[in-house]
Each structure stands twice: as C-alpha cells, then as structure tokens.
Length: 297
Ligand code: GDP
Image (tube, rainbow, N blue to C red):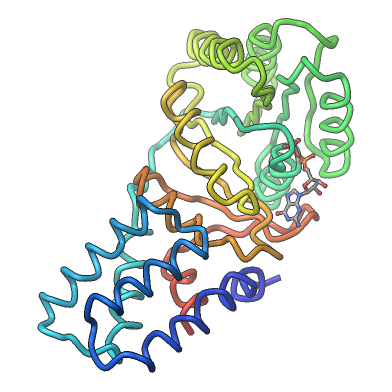
C-alpha cells in the first residue's frame, strides 16, 4: 500500500471539502476561515491545532499579499511541509541501539515492533525483541509469535516478573550477543496509569545504567483511528516519560488522518513511521512532504 492509497479516506474527507471551500468563496474572509475551521475539526485535526494552523495560514497569506482562495491549496501545502519538518534527531549511537516502545493496549504496538524488527533486519541488523509487558501473558506469547515470524531474537521472563528486570536482562543479552537493535516492549494498561508511568521510568533507569544513553529513543505508538484520543495519549506519555518520536498506526482505512497534523503541530514531535496495514511490510517511513502532497494532490 502506498501512502497516498493508505490515506485515501482522509484525503476524501479533506480534499473534496477544500475544493468546495475554494470554489465557493471569492476571497479568504471570515466566512472562509470559519468554513475551514469546520473542515479541519471534522477531519480530526482538533480544535487547538486547527486554531494554530489557521493562524499560520493567515500569516502566510498576509506575507504573500494574497487574499485569493485559489492560492489556498499551495499555502496549505507549504504550511504542512513546514509542520512536518519537525526536529529530526539523527545521532550516532553506540550499538545496541535501544528503543523503548510505549503505548496503550490495542493501538498496534506489538505489530509495530514486529514491523520495525523486520525493517531493521532487511538492513542487515541483528534485532532482539524483549517482552516487557509482563502484565499480560498473552502479550508475551503474541510477541514471541511475531519475533519468530520475522526471525528476530526474543527475550522474555515469566508473566508478572518486574518489567525492569526483563529490560535489564535483555540489555545484558543484547550487549553480550552483539545485537544492533533492542526493541523493548512495555505494558499499555491505562487503568493503572500512575503505576505504568513509574514502571516505564524504572525501565529507562535500569537500561541506562547498563548501556550509556539507553534507551536512545522512547517511541510512542498511537492509533490514528482513535482521532483525538491519540492526542491525549501523546500528552500523557510525553509528560510522564518524554516521548522522542511517534508512530501512527492504522492510517489505512481511517478518515481521521488529520490527527497527524494535530500531533505534529501541538507537540512538535517527529512522526517517524506510519502503519498502513497488518502485515510486517506495512510500515512506511513518514515523510511530511509526501503526506502533504498525497493529501492535497
Ligand atoms: P497492541 O495491543 O498495541 O500490541 O496491538 P496489536 O499489535 O496486537 O494490534 C491490534 C490490532 O491492530 C491487530 O489486529 C493488528 O493486526 C491491527 N493493526 C496494527 N497495526 C495496524 C495498521 O497499521 N493497520 C491496520 N489496518 N491494522 C493494524
């Protein structure tokens, strides 16, 4: 699936309306902006991000000295490209590189870990997956099935073991056996939020003690179909453990892809990949300019 196909429902939701917005207004006046606000909110860009986006678009229009709705698409495209530039951190990492994968149950975290492992292995890397969600026995089993399917190394301990102990020993194994990448799964039970956040902090501490700089990145997985919930999850995890980057799953088949814009605008956080299906190949590096193009072409 290509990105442009994956976001076809979101595109349908947004482009048709923008076409009619552009053709039904003679100038970008208050009525124009009000209608745009409605379109953005319908597409799950959300209230706050919609306000920010409109302010930026107005500024852009003013700077270009244009009030012509015909110019709107190119203004929006330029603005989206700017938003998705985000802070890209490319750092040299002493292997094994460690990613702590966080996110609420059901968002597609397990599948995403498998997809990341598959990608890294295609690049010739040796990958270890560690089962840090010891809260659910089924989570450990499912992750093992995926690890075997993609041919990655797997580390787990008994259900209900302290997840930090799993992380610590997995870190040991990754160091001793020359792995390039360690993907640490973590629990996603939100009903014991405070405990979960403490658990994640502890995992960070123990792997950092074993291996300088680890975890190198905390990666939050969110489900694009949940629209504004994806935003509140981002806020929650970011405030608690500091999220370095986002992966948005299930962008295929949802009309709520506007949440991508909201996340980028409100958190200034890079979206590194998007999930476009259930198979191990269905993960695409996220390029903001491609997204803007796919959305508006
Ligand atoms: P977890 O509870 O967060 O670990 O979620 P899972 O990885 O078990 O995924 C939950 C469901 O979402 C499964 O049925 C996956 O196949 C599905 N899923 C995950 N990512 C995607 C995606 O990008 N697109 C689609 N369509 N389904 C996905």
